[in-house]
Image 1 (cartoon, chains in turn yellow, purple):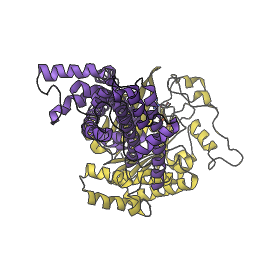
Image 2 (cartoon, rainbow over the protein chains, first blue to last red):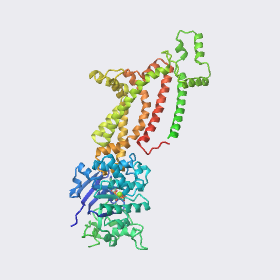
Image 3 (cartoon, each protein chain N blue to C red):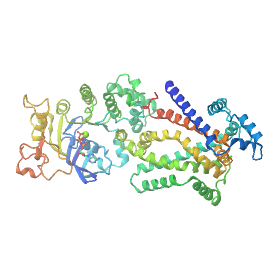
Image 4 (tube, rainbow over the protein chains, first blue to last red):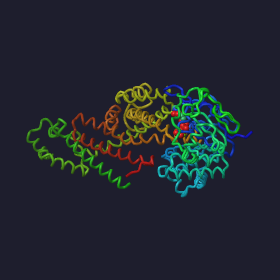
Length: 320
Length: 306
Ligand SMILES: Nc1ncnc2c1ncn2[C@@H]1O[C@H](COP(=O)(O)OP(=O)(O)OP(=O)(O)O)[C@@H](O)[C@H]1O
Ligand SMILES: [Mg+2]
């Protein structure tokens, strides 16, 4: 039995929309041990960001609603915390960085002031102390001219720098866990590599747990200990990075690998899996991947359970 | 910055030149013969002709205009027909009460509009939001003289908390400032509400929440700072909007400012005063706009003066 830092159990969550209630996450279970990096992969729209934001309860409700499930963090169910307990967790024990570095910083406040905020909130730090810590953390995330950056505004910084600032801000209170929602998607390739390098280094140095959301399997191979593959709001395969990448069980995972420039065998690379993720509300009773699946069978009209020991998959075609 | 300022000032100057053409035109638009006004009804044609020449009214229009602008440039706004005194000092003595009234009205509308808008935005769609928006609608659509008289009736007559009118102490200021500022407060509460609702959907608000900031601090520290920008831009324009309001409010409350002066001048067709007050009002509107543009970059660093 591993000891978990974060454990999501059977999370079902949806949104109230004009078209009625739509379930977006269906029985999502994930776990993360101390010091581990878990990759969460899947195509656009399959619910990765919603999962990430539900951990810190950042989704406005309404319209969002948790139907059932638990999010255990250090033996407490986050979903049952009071507002003040939740605020004590956010930014203090769990840091988060977002998919949109360009718009995630407040345009009317200096970098220094924004960086200092978590410390002032959680540690009741004074201005001088907060500034020293801000300088320190900026250096740690590899930002030169830290002194000068503190007085700059977000619009004076490039996207890569802004994402570094976001990382610095998430780390300034030395959290136990970092949620990184596609931290590199909005950045260009060379910057992407730098940011991922930084995350790896920080993970090793600080020993924090990272939930790394990405749609790039190459990133998973380089950065993650374990992986969860998500499709249409469900976890369809999970295991160690080696297991999932070298011996994929779910046809969706195989499709993703075949479409990935790094894993496709020579000459066999497919541009992408044909078809699209069914949107919430258009998902039936059966396996959501059935309509795109090369191995589809009659039984796929009923939902396959996620089964297996360490390496699990939710597919009728693979009996592990 | 300095280049920007120079550009704005010269544009303002051109606007003011345009205004002088309009005020100059007033002399001919207003159906009153200045000569008759000065000379009185019982004067002889000879006296009238003499005054006409004295005033330069026998000259061609361009010459008259140049003479008018030249006098303006020397700070001479002309001489009142009815009051037999110079317009410049007259306006100068009436200006401080009006500025005080406007300042009071701006403070009143901000103190009403910003909290009401913030509150409505934070309760979007709920009863409190709807009630606040109905109240703002009522405040916007109430005519100022009705509002002023109602306030006097309730707060100066029924509950004698404030004086009926006049000028002098802070308590004299409260009701007129409220009357002048309430409609603006209604506008501001709507602007603040919609601007805040938009800001609350921005990613940086989510970031602030993810830091563990209490919701009220997210609203005030990260939300308000950004949401207030369009309102700051409006404060300067208010000076212009208030210029017509002060005429009504000053008369309802017996407030000795340029609005009252203007009203009396209109009744006695005292053209030099009408021209002078119009010009001064225009200067204030232009300055107000300039001020609004200068304040914006102090709040939003993305706006650079160029
Ligand atoms: N506020 C909302 N109201 C209704 N539906 C929503 C809302 N937010 C997200 N969704 C739906 O939830 C689903 C999952 O969205 P999510 O943003 O988690 O996708 P993602 O996996 O992060 O994709 P991407 O790679 O594009 O970031 C989408 O189908 C989306 O339409
Ligand atoms: Mg996403």
